Image (cartoon, rainbow, N blue to C red; front, side):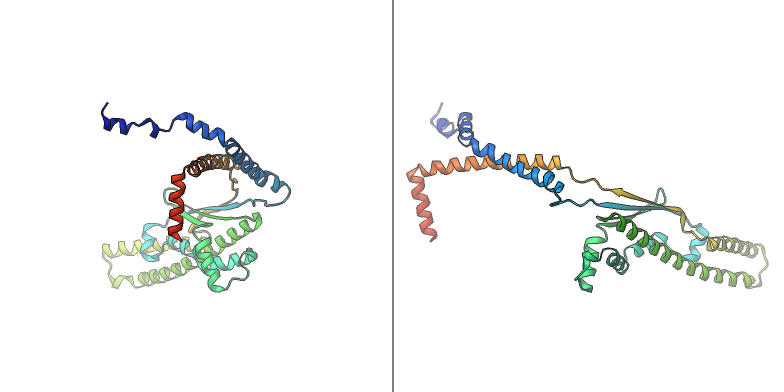
Amino acid sequence: MSEEQKIMHDPEDEVSFVDLLAVCIRYRRLIVGLPVIVTLAAILALYVLPILGVNRTKQSYTEQIVVGIGQQPKNLQEYLDFDVIKSLNAALSSTQTVQDLYSKYFPSEVSGMDADALSSFVQSGIIGKRLTHAYDANESLFTLRFQANDKKKTEEFTLELWARASSSVQDILSEKYATAISLMKQQLNSSLDGKQDSAALLQKSAIAQTYQVLSLFQNSKQFPFRGDKNAMLIVNPQQSRKRAILLIFFSSLFAAILGAFILNAARGIRQDPQSMAKLKEAWGAKK
């Protein structure tokens, strides 16, 4: 073996398993004691204190509303020019509406906030976080979800928000119906500039059919919503306390082992005059 290879494989530079084991044995009280103490403290905080009524974790609930959305016939779309899903999203994401309802059902959470702070809280902490909604185009289902810690208020808030949003959409749609029907009446009464050829008669017949369909939709009390809404309260599962305790135990064990090797390194430095001299020199230079 060459001299260079001897230097590269100097046995004194290698850390043996026995050395590592010796460090663990020397600081066994730290390695065993710290995880045990931390784990016992975690068990006390997660299991015992909630039983005594201290540090009780609140149960959260999610109210979910699922509603079918009816599809408009294509021959009505050119007259109505109305997007149900877009209007629903806008109504449910209205900061003012959500702000009013949240202040009504959860006043203790927003007490002391001025108008700007309340608006910022609703936009950053409620809409898109605890209050979500989505449309499944394949199933033609619209889903609204809201999460809070109070079971009754969670239900009431979500139901009233949906009632306001759906009523707003139906009001807008009623205005669209009235405008479209008025336009169709004008087209039917104009007799298409007095033309009586087959093309004109077919066009007039198509308008009349569309008018009848539109009248049926206008008289429908539910459209664009298909069937009754399906409201359901979901009890959100709490985080696993066992998983948290295991994570705490292994984290503290790792910290204890790391601390043991740091203490062992510090012990070696204290016993080495040259290392201590360097540290003292560095400390003096810092000052």
